[in-house]
Length: 58
Image (tube, rainbow, N blue to C red; front, side, top):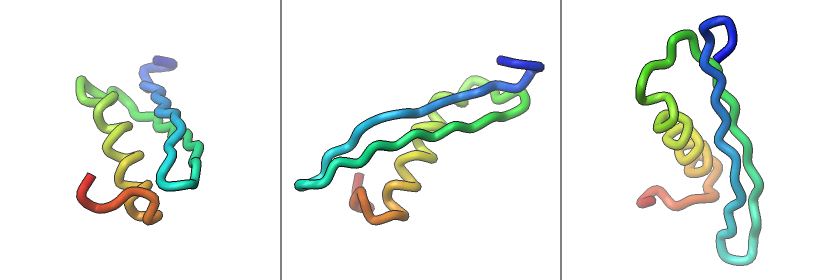
């Protein structure tokens, strides 16, 4: 936390079929609350689905 702003990263490597994807998500939120870490994961998975990297059923 910096100046009451929560800073969160979600970083990883994903291999789907023969393709490897590296990703990093950074979000900042004022007084993020208890679900901040879960929100980072949900946002990342939604973006990977929107980019057709992950199927919709994951």
